[in-house]
Amino acid sequence: MTGRMTYARAVEPHTWFDCFETASERELRAEVRAFAWDNFEALRDEIDAKGRCDHLMPLLGAQGYLGTLVRRDYGGTGLGLGASVVIAEELGGVIPSLAALRAVSGVFVAKPLEEFGTPEQVDAWLRPLITGEYTTAVAMTEPQSGSDLAAMLTNAVRDGDGWVLNGTKKFISGATESDFILCYVTTNPEAGPHQRLSAFIIPTNAQGVDVSHAAQTMGMKGLSHSWVHLDNVRLGPEHLLGVAGEGLRMLEFLLAAERIDIAARAIGNATRAFEEARAYADIRQASGRAIRKFQAISHKIADMRATLDAGRLLVLRAARYYDQSLAEHGAEAASRICNEEASIAKLYCPEKSFWVCDQAMQIMGGHGYEQGTAVEAMFRDVRVLRFGGGTDEIQRHIVQRDDYRRFHDSRGDD
Image 1 (cartoon, one colour):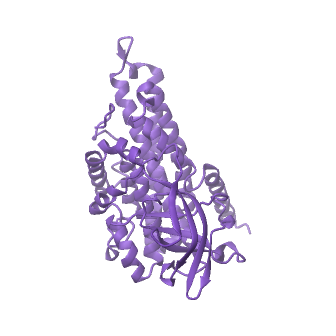
Image 2 (tube, helix red, strand yellow):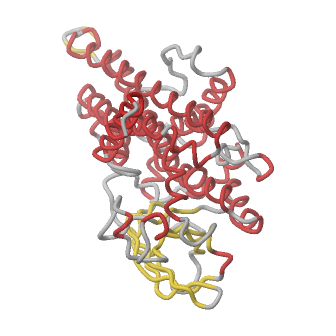
Image 3 (cartoon, one colour):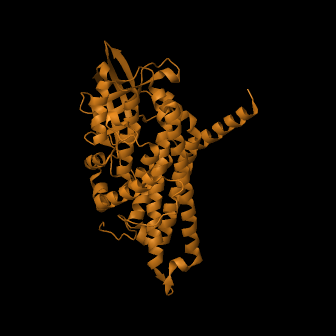
């Protein structure tokens, strides 16, 4: 328990999901929840104050929680996205920053390394990553551009058989404490978007790399959100991931898994806030009775419960579809096939989870607004998930675009 009052407990009832989750997933959920509460619940204030949680990653690695998307012969567990989102939800309800760092290492970087890395890159970077020996970050966003990858100015220029990198990235989560960064840069500015970008593995101790300037943010305080400056950083050919010009392809094949993971973490945040408010409303008295017996409160609890169940089902549907498509068609096709379902989950879950956290704080009043409480932490941390990994507005665009594409395909339109 933290220094603040916690109303929820490590074991809380969930709505019946037995027909949707496998027995192994239910066992995993109970295992992760117990592990997270036993090892991390008391550390939330400390982690936020220190501004880093990377020292906890070896614990996740030892449990096998960092390699769920990586095949066994590369050191992972190969359990798939269905298992990964269970871990994301349960960690998200304890220390969201740790759940985010786990996603960066185990999903956003591990999967491209597995798919595009050479055997030498797998041994040097992927294996230490999924044990928690190394931590990492993904660098895409720049001061003048976020989702508009065509506006990316950071560049790499050939120098013999190697490269020289220059430019600046901003809001790079976990960069200050990372051992290496997977950085997307422009290598052919005259080319179209599908040949313009490349991905590089950049050791943070390389000469010319400065990741010392972290931005102060409202939430996700348990990891850095850094400026990354690259000043004539010279890298050998072994630091190029895949082939030059394949950067956008790498990003696109991973987008669905990234969005589904973000949706799962949002549900984890909101579920914790709900559990706190539910327990509080059962003991808080007004006019001689528990406030949950007042309709104004009981209806909020019902709406929150229904919202969370809908979100969990959307996450589960998208994760199931991704795993099925991955097995049948491979990672690149899987992201394209379930793109709409991933964006629906990414749109609904962070948006509605923020609403759930807001309702939990409304129910608890000052007891939820006080700094250091679980509800206050979840309220702060969930907000970034509505634009991190693609804004609500972009997800709406993707959903309607893909839906109309299927609509016209069904009619045989050109």
